[in-house]
Length: 291
Image (cartoon, rainbow, N blue to C red; front, side, top):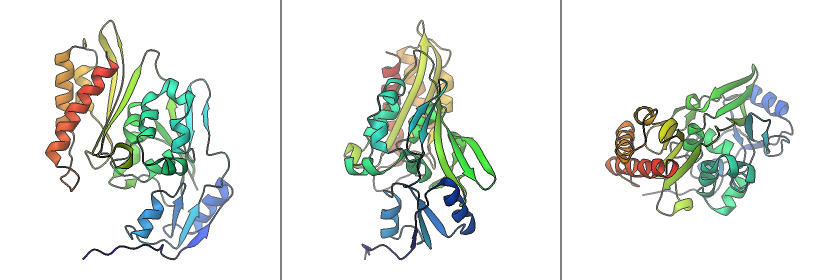
């Protein structure tokens, strides 16, 4: 018999006003506290008892300076508290990174997008995170701050397993940085889910690339919900980079992308179906950016 919990477990609520105050508290209560940004992932997890109740919930929403989008001429930065809705409606992001906007607009309900953050989405570490595939194709990095100072990690190394990241219990994500895209590059994010934004991705595929005189000069393919962590389709990228873009090349790259992933069977889709859809969505994505 299934048991459903509706009430939150008991915990102590902490609301720091600065990064330093938050880090100081986390340093003194390591492994006893959970950080909350928008709360759209954490609160349902606590209600369902999906995770052990922490002694403290540290709400960082009130920290100023982590909610913006900035550009210094070479790097775009998305603050850890920047909401999904703000990213999805950003003209700056749309003009440079349309695949990020497509991912943002495919996530959850309008209410969740108004509260949830991209930072929280990647820190949750789920394989189906919509933000991850496009960010992987854009060579994104994350800035993390802790008692030892700041460290910058490529997003590819940030995910360490299902719902696991390299973020320690006494650290905070500060921002997501993305280098300025190469002129003429194009990107897309395609998501398969029963109700589009209202469901988790069964498969998510992002592609970002450039080509000159019909030849692919650069390509990155990101996959979500088809492996223990969001991943790059490295072998598929190798097949198309430096090659003249033809239907046969795209077909082969898409086929290899489907063979690279390692999806699971669950109540939402079979592993075989997910592999087939990686092939189909990768083919569509490549056709779009190289059309």
